Length: 237
Image 1 (cartoon, rainbow, N blue to C red):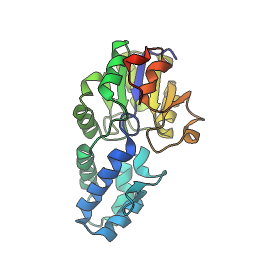
Image 2: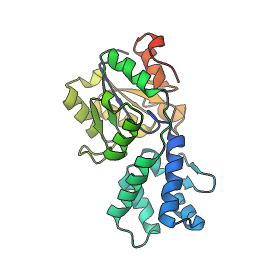
Image 3: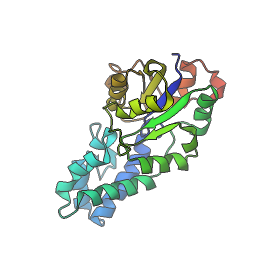
Image 4: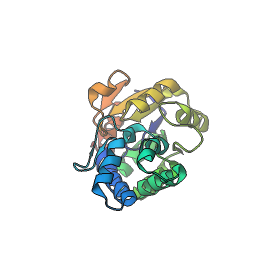
């Protein structure tokens, strides 16, 4: 695969989904319910999170949705809370959520940049927590472009974030790969005319992604081999 740029999804792609967002869900639910376990379980179920077992359902809105979409599902269970305040709380807890790197990110991304690739992030998370997560991992400066669902380009599966990356870099879509762990990511890449790489560090399995991906990899550490970089430059996950 010969490419000049890569756009990465964040959660489930750069970072392991379950390790990050299960902790976020528990922190958020305990905060808004003040430790009321029955209420927390009800709210969790509204977004596909099993509070007692601390895990997400494969079809949870949190996996590929935006904070606003999560707020829509949660608001009926939070009488009296304003949407703007709920979204703010969701984003505050997201920014604090511990991040588990899918692979050693600094080494992986540095090798791709050293090979001349332009790099971007397109996430359905808000931009501020996304930047906080990337900064905490020490990689925010490795990206030419970072867009969240509130950056003015819309959210996935619409292609607005990816088209903005193309405008920013001047690259041709057929020379850029969209890398993600969900059908939302791959649909966005398809709509933008990009190559599509699925990874299995999110909640989706191979069969969920195969119809939309040009190739499916275990994790982003295998991209180097796919595009012809020497494998010793990037540690596989």
